[in-house]
Length: 272
Length: 273
Image (cartoon, rainbow over all chains, first blue to last red; front, side, top):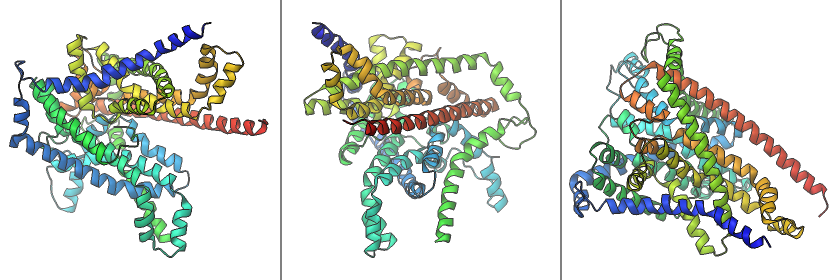
């Protein structure tokens, strides 16, 4: 007899979740698209889109993609061997935890540390001075921006690759070796293709945030590097031109969707 | 073979060294009486005293903790029912759509989440401050908690529920006495992930916080933009130690639950079916 009423009670309990989907997943995207069609005065216009296709914005988009590509590439080159070697260690759970630990420290604090490290009197400059290169301007360069971003993102690249390597059946590599494949061939023909899903989700969880970073560019790169994220932040919080900010956001969303589509859907690469 | 091992160990050591160097660097200079992040002059606790004397900062730390605990609790509760809702859908297409919608916020860049929530709050008329920050944190934590709870729910055999129903359990009892205990590990890890996301967030909060309200990350950002101040170093040392404590606690608790899982499996083998 209370079967029916509890069915209703349960559907009632589902409401907050569905409400969340509508209000915080669907509505925000719709609102961003909607706002991108208005100028600062609130008039309906396509001018924002016309502006986006001017050299200033296209150059910025291109350089944003270029930096994100560099950051992803170097993160992958550093993370893959590290993940591979991690699976070969004793107490690998503990080592993995030690890789994850720094990611739980606020990103801003780590970025802040580099202000000191790359500073004019910081340790890197004293090292350069000792070798004989003399003092260099390290802070507020694009190089330091790329370095700090790689530093931040490497753990997020290591985790999915590590998981993929863990799922890899050891007997497959053993078989390859038994059949006479060299370690390089085993890697190229067996290990790498089988861990490609981990590589993909690692790349997604680095590339998309790398497009949209703005605090690192502000703190480390000065205004040398402007990413799509910096542009959005600038428009929303500094110049208050929400229309243009939304337009840049629309392109970022489109880029994101294309990346997700091309890589065939992420495997839930947790963590921005 | 030996030499190869040496090289690979060296590589790992190097990765770990680079990973931890900036954090240790921050901690080291938090004891510098010189006041800069170079040239260590002498040992001092002054910066720690400054942190504890800074009432504004203490209030912000408390704010951050309140937001984190509250938002992850609310998000976890909504996510439990969200997972049940997803699991209860029969039609595969609708289920996949809902799952994709669930994951949108996880893959979205923070800037997009922040900017779109800012538009939303302004349109609806939510005052920027505590409420907007709390709602945003709940909103971006829900999908993570769902992703932690859902696999556990899918592991659960439907026969368990059928058995409970056959034995006369009401729907409410099935939920509180069968389903919830079974997915408890998922709930805990969902809550924990939500907590770390909330504590770690900067960009979303930065967008939706008004002028009067601030969380730790936003405060650090505005202080760091003004230049180096060693009280930030002292604060980050404290935060790092706190995180370390949380991680160790989490590690021990999951180890324990894994042991329990083993015990459960063993007992299941022992019971003839």
